[in-house]
Image (cartoon, rainbow, N blue to C red; front, side):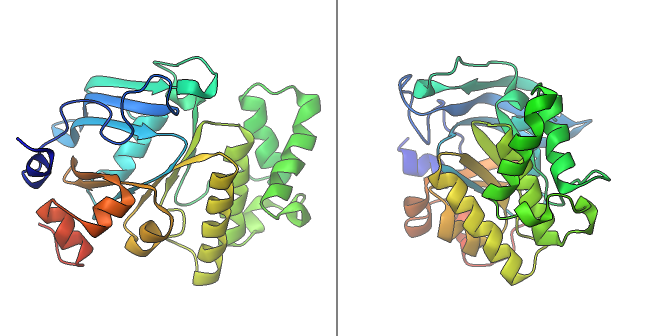
Amino acid sequence: MAETDRIRAGAQPDRVGALTGDDPHGPPRVELRAVWVQAGALTLLEDLNLSLPLNARVVVLGPNGAGKTSLLRLLQGLQAPARGELRIDAGACGAPPAASTPARRLAYVFQKPVMLRRSARANIEHALGVAGMPRAARGAAALAALARVGLAYAAERPARSLSGGEQQRVALARARALDPLALLLDEPTASLDPGAAAGIERELMRLSQEGTGLIIATHDLALARRIATDVVFLHRGRVREWGPAARCFEAPADPHWCRFLAGQWLE
């Protein structure tokens, strides 16, 4: 069966590497082989076979309940697969591969940032401490992280008193300070006003240009069209369309994906 026919039929790829290929000397990536995720009798993700680049801007799209957050939680290690294999491959970036410690290689930014009852700087210092950074180095590292996202002025302010956009930038700074291969972002602009959302989008593009990979779960097609280099479309826990963003948007194959692009209801 031709690849486009497989997509139209809703079939899963039968090899890892659908997005980036299987070159061991290529970019870092996360590989999923025949992965299923379940919650009791409910199947959240079904038979995923993907290779997601960790030096790109991968946007995971789908309607509510499609499995987008479940995929991010799986990648972070917050959700264990019922069966299948998840592997982080550092590729040619120089770091050793990590087969069972995805949480150490990826950093999760939740849709609603979790802020401790302390200053913005102390929130980042706490994360650095958990990651094992010596106490003497945390203060300067936290201030540098805040400065990179334009929040040096807010370093000593209580994090929970900051605006939604500022809290999201603190969360980005905190995650980026851990020096992960990539950030996992769950609806990073969904609860923000247009100005704050535009600021977060600019920050994400800057992080990408500096070499931080992004895997973003969203239902926002406009955001995806602006920033995605690769697209994964989920519907009812299955990958229905995947690949370079230009091809997915300009030559959609799967009928569910076509309806989603047209703004139609998906059953």
